[in-house]
Image (cartoon, rainbow, N blue to C red; front, side, top):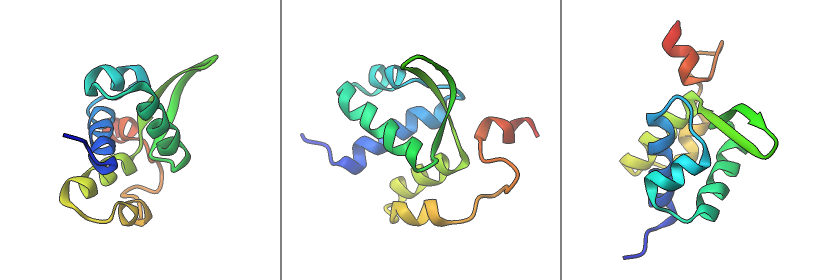
Amino acid sequence: MSQTARERLKEVLEVIVSKELVSPGDAVVETGLPRYLVLAAFQCLEALGVIEPAFVKGSYKVYTPTIYAKKLLKALESGEKPILALLSEPASSVSTTLSSEATT
């Protein structure tokens, strides 16, 4: 059965939110999705501020989720419009990364 774009994005976000640090390769292995789809999702999510690079060496990047990643995942799971999750105000205006919120 063919997955919708929404279902594929949800799978990728589940991997991202479940880890503090994640590379596109990790998401490919865990989701079983084609690499090109996962890389496209990561590029779009980074451009939207849903994930942020935590480590970059050449073309290799490791990302960390922002608070918007969890909001977007919840919207995808509940059937809400995903864009509304991204437009809502973050819980903390000081920091938008999940990992830094966990330490405060």
